[in-house]
Length: 458
Image (cartoon, rainbow, N blue to C red):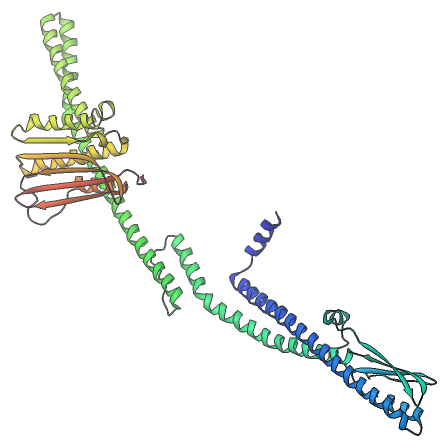
């Protein structure tokens, strides 16, 4: 829970503040590491200084004691010996005898206030002590105690440490300020990018980023511009497809309205006339005439049933859900075979390509239906080959539909009609691709590839 709260708190900080905090942390860690190393070195240096001071003081005192035997007034010489240490920064010398004499170092001034106790404990330089007896001319005068006083040396180290921290602070503050300003300048293009993304989210795909940038950000800018260009193209394509879809819908509705008007309307009118005639014949008692009019109604109803079945076949493939893809294709081919007995139809549907879902099966059927209609209307072929197979390649598993004829192909400027255009858009909406190979005078080949694992868009 504490980690989650910490992560949430960090998430509220800007990237600039995070980078400055990281740099400041590096400075603090460097200061801590440098201070630790400096303290270790300083502690060793103070210890060496104290040992040297003790050695010099001891040699001085021993030499003075040795000269006492030749002195006229040994007590005065002792006083002079102890007094020679007045002003010494590192040792305290005390004589204990008939008279007491002490030479104590004078503490240095502390520019950075007094030296804190934690620093003294950190340096850990304890004072050393030596006691020398004073014997001269067979007489014992007392003892001289020599004690090191590291205070002044530690204070000097403390002052140097404080000066170093002050210099580092004077260096760090402008450095962090400059880094803050530089990062702000460097991150300014990201603000433009965020604004551009907001505009893209609002549907404005015409936005572009420009201006000189560092190599890392220039690649990001170029990727953003390519993305917006592709989105603009996709938006234009979507508008075109919507317009084409509306056109196809209107065309289909017009065809259905025409069929209802031309095929269904007259027969319904005829049935109404025959029903009225039967009513009149029944009132007149003409039974023979009633049978003839009833037979006419039956013929009209049969024709209506055939027309409705044909229209339903246009709206939904007959037999596809009930008998499967292969049977539906065979039923479609048989429909055209009865009307074009001179055309040889070759159909091959692999078992692996069947029952791949209603959407894929319907799309396969519609592609074949449109291809057959185009070939027989415009190509005058002698042979039409239909092949549906399951294939695997680098793109994964797919259903591949190929319809090839040996007719006249598409003469003149190559272009697709509404039917194939609609099928192409339907195939692409499923993540597939539709290709048309045209050889004027030698036939046409249409190939649709429908990936099985592709996301289907409505």
